[in-house]
Length: 114
Image: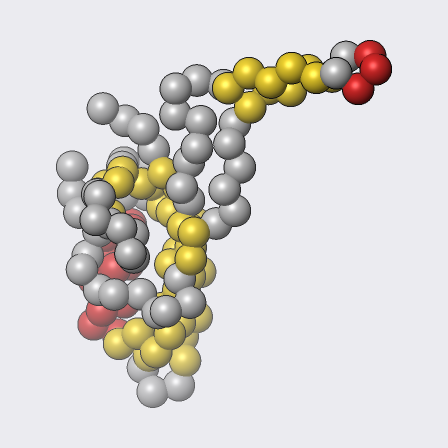
């Protein structure tokens, strides 16, 4: 499995909303029962934000994303974490700016592949 290019994103990169996958069954009188859906119920999705990315760095990231656009997972270590996680990137938004620089937003979805 490949590793995402070591080009640091902008400080605005952040994990998306965390929402554990839990089935909730509501019964009468306000009583409810909750059951986790699977063993990996908490997925850490990220949005990587790059501002004023050089054309060379954008070409490197773009080539990587295109090579993995078939849903192939890759390794990435999110900011502030020491553990490597497995992600896919099936959505990104490049915006060309004046001076041959790019602003890019990349959505990463955590996967639990073996």
